[in-house]
Image (cartoon, rainbow, N blue to C red; front, side, top):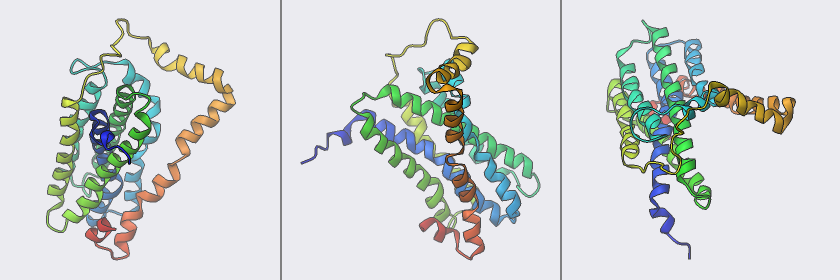
Length: 264
């Protein structure tokens, strides 16, 4: 009979809760926000432009070394960046309800881009934290916890949010989505610090942070192999991202209500 002990493991529960926070901004940007824009009468061309704001998720590998290098002056390493991005995401998502996309479309799309950058940075910090938090024996099961948590986060800000529009205004729905991120804030404040990986007394130089790791990859894969690897990382999900960015407005055009889309 399988043991239920892993279900009570504090480290795995931490991974679950952190990834709920990780999934919330993604579904907000790719599902709920696009439904809102369609309701506001924004053209399909502009909605597609908003879909481009999720590209920081694709390119976050390029500033991940900088997040690894700089320690912020609160909490412990990794937890500092998680808390900062979450505390900025909450007002950023809530403030979107105060901007009219018809009148200030480019300011609105710029805020969506900022949310995507903050969310991608949060993902970098969460992935680094859970890698150092978990033992090698826990990492296999942690992959399941990570995916389940991410899907719960997407359900909260996607499916549940679309269903809430049957009873609440868009501004209140966006406030609820921002409130869901408090799950991540509370988790970061309560989760353990990583004392086994202290911040080095001498910070690595810019060359050590960004240039030398890529040179090491060139040695491992050859220049051509590295180019193929980077192209795979960048373009692997790119077509899916563009296709999904218009799926919600497409279903609305076909006559499906937002609660119906959310339930599906």
